[in-house]
Image (tube, rainbow, N blue to C red; front, side):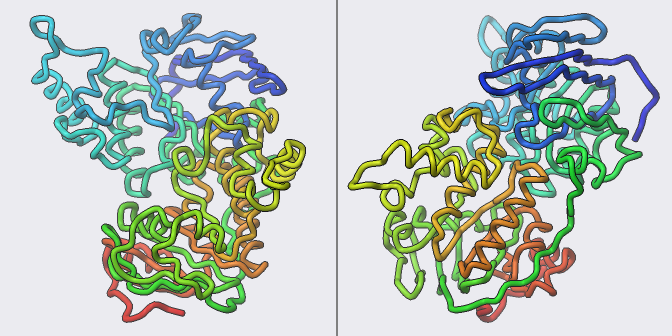
Length: 507
């Protein structure tokens, strides 16, 4: 994929940025050329997002310079960066759910007629951009009704409408299905072929190897590797990111199942139909499926966040079908939700307070009070155990990167030592080194005699961790596999609907 050399589009020289207690960027140099897909990689807290925030005018560097198309610039805010031809798609999309696709795309850059928004011209503009760049989306669709993959297309269309020549994408596939991720990279390659520049911030090695031209790796705020993708390997990139050799394809040994902990019989909700399953102590049961086939709704029903219309759920022999989420936790259920921001954490609360949640009525409570020293000690222990990078335990959770927020959530829930752990997308947005740590912690949790029900969009994660795998399709469990049977071909066929529903759940 290497192209003939051209003049740099983006040049960062000596970028340094300090926050209280943290040197986020330490004299970073980065050069990206026109027509290039350039991957920026590093572990959580390595300084990637800070560097891109400086480039996009959201933060000011303490030292260093920025050149765009050979001209030195200083961006006081993102609007100045946009005027210079930069555009950024953030992990959390900046869209108005109540407006249409066309209205979102042209917002603040509207075609006008007689001083008013020309809606016909806006729709026409979106259709033209969508056809030109392979970003098919209905201009009249309400954004709030769109799946996440199409919302991302709307974000890219916004940038193209504003004439962006350099696109910065921050963890663009963190919330996409494999098919959606493949479609995104096809679009990015097309944009690069047209002479646009793409800077890709990601943790996913396969995507980098298949979709980028060059790779720059940050570790602890410094550049530690500059690589040509065609000449490198996953192992080399992973070692640069972590500073050590990493086993990328580890499959954990199976567990030793004991008594049934979770038993689900004929469970039905608005999006789940007649599901039966059992999870035993000392066992990890994985649920695979293309996003939108009922996996999240099933877990929400088990956690008490979605009403059950039929069927039964028992935990350690107790019927919990219609009890509250609070009572389920009291009876021995821990839960790592898919949405770590809106459901899993309180962003405005401190890291320490977030780590105390759920423990505040039990292990941390002293006569109904929460001693601050006890909360700090508890937080410090989990921060060290899970490698959570926070300046202090007192900073708000919103100050953490997405990957570190995920570590916080995983650590808090595992610390409950509950008989049953429900965990969705445990390593989404998490760096390679932390993925290994989280996987090891989940397996250790199983081996300590707990039951784990795991939902993941990463087939390698399902195959590496699960003792049994269930596949969901259109709200039903349509296939079950042992660890040895769950190869990618079988799982992929079942996920596409090419499997016959089992006659009964495997116990």
